[in-house]
Image (cartoon, rainbow, N blue to C red):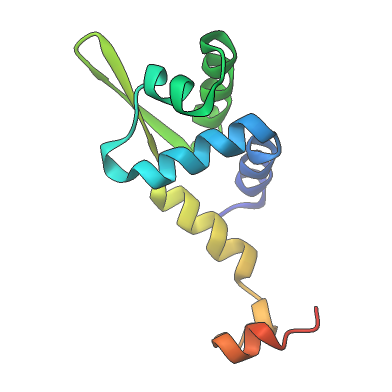
Length: 107
């Protein structure tokens, strides 16, 4: 993952509502959620939710698919995994981390 994409993703997630939306979509899995379900679940006003979904979409962290009159949003798991891989690429000085290594990490 390129550094510019990492920065764009982290900026999009650096807001409480967007982080909550993204996490809800991760929990929903491949089935995704509609904006109305997200708004109800997270108690976010629909107009505010629309803005946050747009930001996450432009950061490529979520996808959208029109299904009839509804739009279905899903977490972009490949992008999420690439971001996590980038962030942990040099974890434990490049050695594969075990539970013991992570627990004893002094970083």
